[in-house]
Length: 294
Image (cartoon, rainbow, N blue to C red):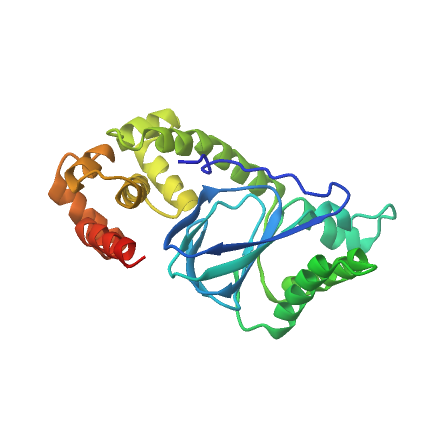
């Protein structure tokens, strides 16, 4: 499994430009990307299908037309719930908003934004003005007509004004921001350990000691950061591994359960059905039917 459970950095394709846009398409249900975070603010604009997006501890059921805002340093995750999911990812480096002339606009709005002190609501739905801005940004980016950089910059300014007027969730103090970053960095080690060892027997007591926390404090903070308990987090990783083996291996159900850390086949099947709404046997049969029909 790829290492997504930690800070993620992707270079801008053009170091002299402040926006990066690309489209993702998925035709299979399941996780499109696992928990990770990064420093740039991101916008996910869904154009077809349905998905579950988790931002910190908040689950969002999204569909075509929805805009999801991923704040800087916010742990997030996406799961495809259909067979035709497509969305644009818009990454914005807010440092481009700074000017050499410091004025009240920069002091009151731009600096707090760039320093990640202003957090927006994650879901924007049925907002025609904001959808219009997003569509124009995407069109300008891919058409690349003369002056497209200026056009995109102007629409980014308009988008920020609309978001600040309608969707500000919280304004952090510097102390709150530093605490948020500290927790994320501390839990990078935990999430990475789980990802590398999720098929083994991992106890809450062991993870809490690794984080140098009491069990109560660890459990509360883990759920706050990951959006689920540590046990649920580990179990979901096991189930996703099982899905891959069901689709891409000839192992039988018992062998797959063992490979994913389940010593009890019945428990494995019950847990699999709880997460996937279908038993592993049914998923294997469905896959075989699809291969025959092809």
